[in-house]
Image 1 (tube, rainbow, N blue to C red):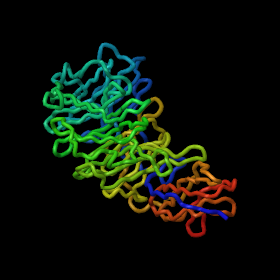
Image 2 (tube, one colour):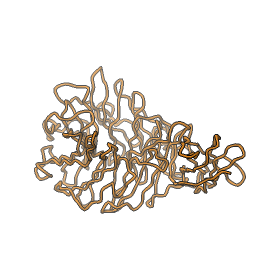
Image 3 (cartoon, helix red, strand yellow):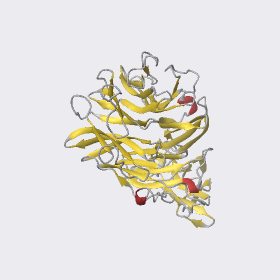
Length: 487
């Protein structure tokens, strides 16, 4: 006799990428690069570190490239159809070299566009944090900093620290958010600058806000970092990122700073609002609150994507744990959501694949809003309807069409995860099943032995199922049944 107990069935909403994809491919915008990925070749190797929208249409990106054997920063501007902006720099690209030498640690990791069309980029060169401002034609703005570049503080930044976000305030002032080396690890950093690149004395403590939000363990340092930020309609600053616990594991981080850079103690922490979050990588305005994306622990104990909508006080209106990957018998499913683009567009990775999905105001993901990108990627960024990736030696941009009309006919699929031995001859069976847009029932099957695993929601995307069975030496596979047909 087989004794079965269903442990958990968690509905998530997402797709993995081809060839092992749950559902259909993402509809690419035929007006963007002719429907094909737009390569951005710069030097012999380039990495895209940041991507942002341009108010007049198009995107601007910043990153690091190797040109003629030297490490250089770059800013690239592309038009609404993916074409290079001929009025910006040389073929839409401007190379930079800040500091005394172009060292291997030089990098640009944040970018923003001001309302007047001027571009800001921030990064680290020679261990120092820099902010540069470019005019619409790509030349450095001589009225900003020293010849267009403002260096901030001494040489203290290493490869794991530096700016992650540039926030432009309504009065023209600027805030650079990221992380800084701390005594026991790294800490959250926010630096206020005036509109012309000087330190803002009215922000925080002499222009600099630092906070150690992580916890120190017996053998692990305390670490915390801001990975993204936004300016609210009231002028407050919301910072999202990650912080360590006493075991050295990371959890989500949320901070709200007032216009003067003081921390708001009434804003709910990520550990209270999003207890499953491993980190938060993106944040953007959503109504009177914010939309955040990152990584979380799924029901099977693996890493999954996270998207959530927060209210004005940081309390979640809804939270979705999104498993975009699919497991194998030896490797658990893993995915993450790292970017927020146009309203409702979320992008990230499933393994090495770039993926995207769309959520509505209530957090629901319908069959018509689930997207798959087939490009292999080391990083995934988003700006509007454009997804930016870095794969191989050159970044690439992909323009997406709006969510397709009608309901997709995604086929059902299933994958069994690793079988874990418990105790007293019991096994834990785990897997991910997608019933497509018609719904169905999941079951673990071995020969004629069938273990029901519950009903799956139509159009709900991949859903993690877990069951305990008495060990019988059998191998089970996970199937989805619609009526009498196993898929």
